[in-house]
Image 1 (cartoon, helix red, strand yellow):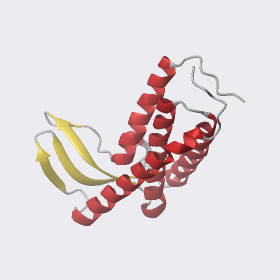
Image 2 (cartoon, helix red, strand yellow; image 1 turned 180 degrees about the vertical axis):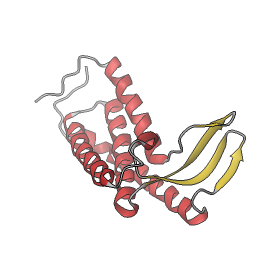
Image 3 (cartoon, helix red, strand yellow; image 1 turned 60 degrees about the vertical axis):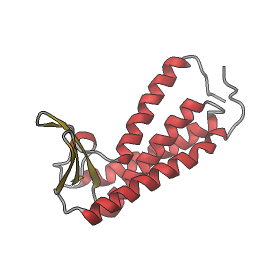
Image 4 (cartoon, one colour; image 1 turned 30 degrees about the horizontal axis):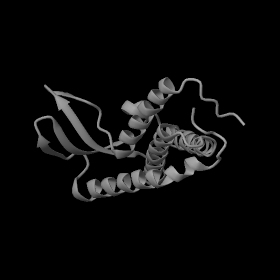
Length: 165
């Protein structure tokens, strides 16, 4: 069982959050500078770069709403970020757990920046097969998805880890 009384070790993973955030913002700025909105650049038979925006959540949930979702999603992401920082502080040396939280934190902050600056999230990765397109996404979304999968995996690997004080 991992040592859990060494508070603050999870903060060592904040470099990864910053790297995800930097890569996310850099790629979005490049897409906005190089592609007109809705422009498509075919890179492979299954992959395009596109410039689309999403004022909603994952899979454009609530994208058709009149604007309340911007503040709501910013608030949810900021609250989640505070909870993640708390969990990282309490996690001790749990590497997979901290890796997952760092990825989620970097992605959440990346999408918060988009919502705060532009009112929507910039998406640009478009995978497709036989005319069916997966909803476009970005680096932040990828980091959040991988982080969530790692959290689930870590939960199965360490089901009895207790991080209470």
